[in-house]
Image (cartoon, rainbow, N blue to C red; front, side):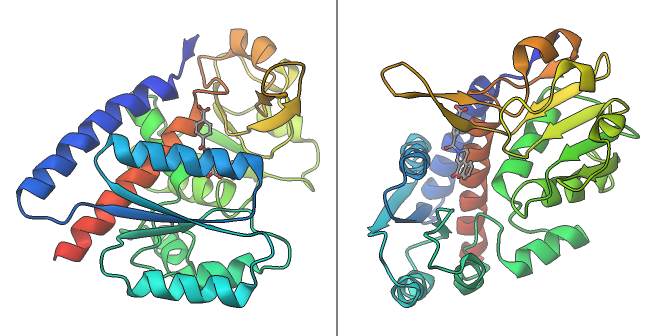
Length: 291
Ligand code: BQF
């Protein structure tokens, strides 16, 4: 069993990115600039935005975080997005999700300039992804593809089961893994809350991507010997420690790992890869604007 070390892999990719950024700037390119908007004070969202800001600095990007109160109106948020769309110094714009309930996420996503949409959430970019065209690929699925690639995991012809059909992980993941080439050429099945007898599907799978947000959902009895296990879950579960919580994946790691050929840990698996994908997309956005 091999542990897919997302932390280590992401650190290596960050070093590569930092070199690319310096070469780009030395050649007269504008230093890439990512702007993140955070609405409200959700603890996990604050952590994620801080991770992104710190990672930008590590690779030599400029970064701005626009923090807005939880009671910000949709109209005010849309106006801020429009300003950033118009701001030539900003290459990438992300709005941290989830947003407070009174704001319509799809309306907000639609307002982001597709050329700055480094999360790849805008319908134009989702459409391009599904057609296999060059675009900003959603960070988590892109990070998983990079992890499979770095560890040279065979995907051609493999049966891949994705647990979860979200717009930000499950669906784009299915898209990417079913596309031609490497890492791809999988036979993909998406399972979700209405799927009958999920175990029947997972037991047949060569690769399982667990992205449903149910802690320890995937148990050892659901997994074939030698399967590749990718855990996207990171639920905060209350605990008696300094932080007051522990992070728990969608996979019952201790019992599943002995059966797996490769497996991602939580934390330190998919999460750090998600962040480097965002950085990768931001450099891509900056490069595109130079043309
Ligand atoms: C790690 C996210 C659910 C909903 C919205 C490193 C991150 C997490 C874990 C991180 C995530 C999850 C992010 C680790 C960003 C990944 O060491 O294991 C980094 O910052 N993430 C997000 O922005 O929005 C989310 C999960």
